[in-house]
Length: 141
Length: 141
DNA sequence: CACTAGTATCAGAAATATTCTAAATCTTAT
DNA sequence: ATAAGATTTAGAATATTTCTGATACTAGTG
Ligand SMILES: [Mn+2]
Ligand SMILES: [Mn+2]
Ligand SMILES: [Zn+2]
Ligand SMILES: [Zn+2]
Image 1 (cartoon, chains in turn blue, red, purple, cyan):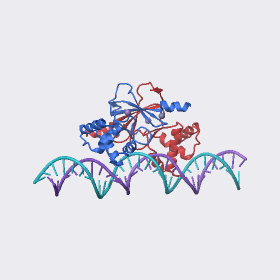
Image 2 (cartoon, protein in one colour):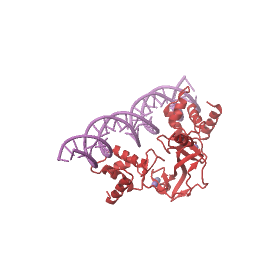
Image 3 (cartoon, each protein chain N blue to C red):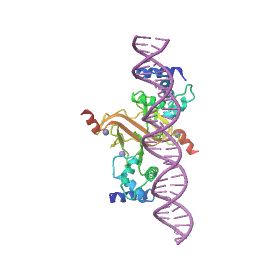
């Protein structure tokens, strides 16, 4: 809905060599506007109320294209769905086993390995799991 | 097939308060005997040649039960399947995007967080991704 | 403004991984 | 031997994602 986010999305698409169609702008904008690390289906449902509506296949295609081009990140760290993140700066995540939310946490230790046991390291993901602040509070009640 | 592994599996099951049925011993033995972090289906196929055969549902049920009781670990780090690990000591993993194999790598930095931004941390998983030694070699050829 | 070629989108079918269901089998205690 | 409870089973159901082939849009050309 936010015009300036849509502008930003369009610029990001162009920079990545992807033509900025209405559907792609909508999908990327939806991801840019949240810090909730949504799944493809969450984005599809969020956009479902828009006119014109966007098909599920296009949401998946767009997210996969953006991941391939390095514009966004995906993670299958926990739960059954792949979840997406528009924040590309290195950071870690906390996954709550109760409410299934994913929170950003600052990246620890500066050193990023480039080789391990002869394997070429291209990226690294650190995921903490447990109970988030809120769910922890509800447990005690 | 290895009798002593089956013995170990049986002991592990009893210790966890799970009755050591033939099927459960077979599933846990199969996992103990490999360092390949297999999926449920890989284990099912590996056991498929045994007489009597074990059903897919039992393989899934057993692995889920073992994860719940903290006997083994599961990870949905990458690829589409959940993969399992009988090694419970803290260690990290390297996932090869080409051959999809998962390798153990020593855990870095000793400090394990117990709380982050008010969230209660129960476990942490560090996953490196890239090209394994072998796939890296094949690329150059 | 047609016409065309290439791209993008679409709805629904198909594929994949996992869980569920309800019946059959095994175990244990009486 | 019987009954109660636990375990296993095959196949159905569900959930997520990808595929398919038809349609719609876009840009370039004459
Ligand atoms: Mn994030
Ligand atoms: Mn491991
Ligand atoms: Zn929570
Ligand atoms: Zn490899």
